[in-house]
Length: 428
Image (cartoon, rainbow, N blue to C red; front, side, top):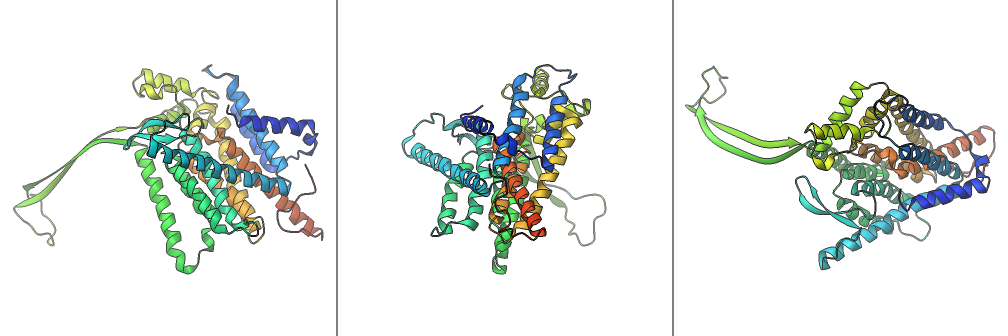
């Protein structure tokens, strides 16, 4: 629980008291969300482990309620835009705080006081990692991943009199703050920024820039996979001469008495990020149908610690992977609905983006899809399903998608539809 939950709880209470529950409409994606929640909860029936408590159930139900609430409110175009501006503006303001603290820390060595933490990072050693009162720097990075997508996309919908270049300048603190989280979310952040920056609009002369950004994202992804798997402690390279091979060689090879020989000796070990994912996969294979039960994976990592497979720092850790964690804890009961849900989200999100292109709602569709893609990539390193703003992003996207369908239906009936994504007949 965080202080931001007060906002959701207060909004939920106001929504119920004002009778907004009557405005809730079931749409297709709601069935997939229900299947995901139900599969996760059913995994607790007959679970061999019994360390999960009510907080895991409460957290799952709470996030589902937040999704339904925000999605219903976002059927209204004005509220949908307010939510989008709130996400972008919150990310900018929070990043200004982070950037300001970094400057104060560098210049005056001001202690963190909850804004950052001194932490050891593989290959980098001891560094200052910003968390800005988030539970971990990774979660701050996830929020900035969503925030940068909305902030960049807003350049397409800048109010009259506001130069889009100022909005681009406002993104810089987000980039700085994200970099100083020193977290895996940097990869998803780059993907979200790439999608939201509308690269398809680059001219032919700027094609090199788009290709460079894509190449950079791929290299960043590959590099992050490597540094999340191996920790190379020491590497030595020895060069010497050895006798030429006795076996025949190709006639084009210059045969000499001695050939150069290079020997590379590396001392390395696996990082706990990799070991936890291996444990999650092994757990799924042992309990393929319903896993070990929602919230019970820490018992698996505890046993791994007792067996010497994990260090003390990761005793009782989560798998740090959305899909593998879900499969380990809930098996196919919760894993299959999760896969279908994400497939639906991307399919429907892409369809909404294509439908809204050239309209006043394209920027919002692009922002939602960018944030969704970024969090999906971040899901390789953390469980993003427990991240509040994933559900807010999904809610805004499907509020927009439903409004697009309503607009198309009105057009089919010969009624004026305004622009795609305009306000629905339902006002909350």
